[in-house]
Structure formats: C-alpha cells, structure tokens
Amino acid sequence: MQVAAPQSVETAPGPSGARSTAFWERLAEVVPGVIYLFNHQTMSNEYVNRSVHDLLGYSAEEIADMGPNMLATAVLEEDQPGVMSYLAALRHLGEGEEASHVYRVRRADGAVRWFRSVDSVFEREADGRVLRHIGIALDVTAQMAIEAELRQVNEDLEERIRARTAELERLNRELGIRMEARTAELQDVKRDLEDLTYVATHDLRVPVNNMGSLTHMLSEAEPLLPPEHVETLGWLRDVSDQASEKLDALICVAQARSGALKAFEEVDLARITDQALVNLHFQITRTRAVVKTRFDVPAVWFVPREMENILQSMIGNAIKYHVPGRRPRIQLLSRRHADHVEISIEDNGTGLDLPRDADKVFGLFKRAHTTPGGAGVSLYAIRRVLERVGGRIDVTSTPGRGSRFSICLPHRPEPS
Image (cartoon, rainbow, N blue to C red):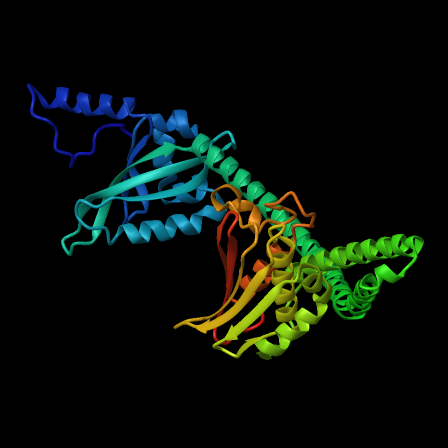
C-alpha cells in the first residue's frame, strides 16, 4: 500500500503537486496518533499514516492487507459491538460535526492498549450518505489507567463513607438508647424531687409550724417560768426557727426547680392571706406588726399552696427586715390592669439600695442585707415560679423608708 495523502484531499497551493503531497505526508507522520481514512462500503481503511506501526505494531501495508478483517483483528472482541454501533452512527453525522469513541485494541505483540478515535465526514455518496470518514486515533492507555485508579479511589472512599455512616448510625442508636435510659432516670429523679417537695410542703411544714407556734406561745409565759426553763425554751425556739428557715429554703428551691405546677384554681386572696398570717403569728406578735389588706381583685387564678407560700414569704421578709424601734406596717393590695392582676406588698422597713444590690435581690443564695440572717432563696424561688406561668415580680425601694414588691399575674395563667 502506498502511504500518501488521499487523492480526494485538496492539497495546499505550491510550486508543485509533488511538494504539496510531501507536505501532507510529513504532517501525517509527525501527528502523535494514527490518521486514517475509512470506507464505509468496504468497511476497511483506505489510508493510515506510518504512526500506526509505532502504536499498533502493524505496518500500513499490513493494515491494508487486512481489509474488512482489520476491525476483527485489531479491536478487542468484547469491544467490537460498540465499535460497530459507533460506525453505524457515523453514517448519520452532519456536516462539520465530530464524534468520539473509546475502545481497546490488541497490538501485534498481544499487548492491549486503549484508544480514542475522533472522526468527521470526509466524503458522501450522491444520496448524502457518508461514504468515507477521516479520523485520528490516540493512545489514551495512561489516561484510562489514571481514570480507573480514580474510580477505584472513589469506590474505596464511598465504601469507607458507607462503613463510617453505618458506624455513626450504630453510635446514634446506642446514644438514643442511652438517652432514653438517662431520661428515664431523670424522670425518676424528678418524681422523687416532686415527692420530696410534697412531703416538705405538706407532711413536714405543718408539724414544724406547729412546733414553732408552740414554742412562741410558751415564750409568752416566760415571766412565770424558772430561769433554767427559760434558757431551754430559748434553745427550743432557736432550733424551731432554724428548722423552719431551712425547710422554707428547701421548699423554695425544690418548687422553683421542679416540674409542672399542680392544678390551678380560683384563690381567695383574703382567705389565703389569713392562713399566711396564722403561720406568722409569733413574728407579728413579737414585732407588733400591723398588716392591712385591700383587695380590689378578691381572687386570682393560681395554685393555692403556692400563693400561700408566696404571701407568707413576702410578709415574713417585710417583718424580718423592719427598722429596729419602728413598728412594722405592711399593706397588701390587689388591682386589675389591662393584661394582668397586680398584688403588691408594701412595707416601711429597711429598704434596698437597688442600684447597688439589684442583682442580689432575686439571686439564688444571694442577700442584699447582712443581718438578720437568711438563706437568700425565697425571692429567687418566687420569681422562678411566677416566670413559669408568664408572671413576674418587680420591686421599688428607698433605703431606710421601705420597699414595694409587685407580683404580676396573667388574668388566667396556665401551669407549665
């Protein structure tokens, strides 16, 4: 076979046709791939450049001798159906269009190499069908090896991701089981705390209050008692006061941090205040405190025991922080506002320096006064309880002249 530019290729203008043919032959030989002209009628290559020997190990003459058997000889058997389909598609290629296909070939020495062919129409028959196409085949074995390696890396990565995902799912399931177990434990603790709060509020508070009332009643008879009994009574009174104070602190903290409040109902402010005053009988008697009430709103929607605790604590604080030598005067008022009911407790006690002690008034275990002693929990607990139902507690005060605490409740708050 003569290796020359196809006769139908228009040669570039020049001094002679021989020089032009030599130019095209030289150009074909320096291209790093197999340039070929394929005839669709004979299903064979009419032209290949000499690079075919370097790439496939066959000479141009050997390729020509193969004729229509070239594809069956050079193309790997499992890739032949794909090549035949590709050639069939080329017969419908439009003008100026290109097509590309990747396949494997077996060299003359038996080595398998990957090639990529890029083709376009060279000549058509009278009816427009493709008669010949021209193309170039490039060895892409190294590129395909890299792509295969990348695919393997991606597959390995995906497998690692799947394994890691499965591990995370397992850990999440274990965490969910642990969280459920921990939640159950916390629910048990919560129930225990609620039981403790109930016991402290009901089962312990009544006997402690009774003990306090008894010691205070006996104190009124001190002038009739022997000195040694007076001393013993003083100890009993101190122990009773300490127990009551510690119990109040325990109740306050437990209620402030416990779960949902008990069922709400209409609370008669006058009746609940009277009960709080009974519990404070000794403090009121000892200090000769005057407590007055004026409830323009006679009832609020709340938990009766909680309201009793709040009012008893607020009145007790007003008595505790009275000015020595000044008779405590305390007034409880209730009034209706557009979006809430206000219960205020006013006193003429020592007052508060709010710019200085604002962060201590409602802080846990914080106290704005150094004397008398206290746990520093009641106002914190009251604020927490009120916040849980959408209420609040505010204070205005003047040092040495007294304080005014305002409890603001929604018209019908709901327990949380």
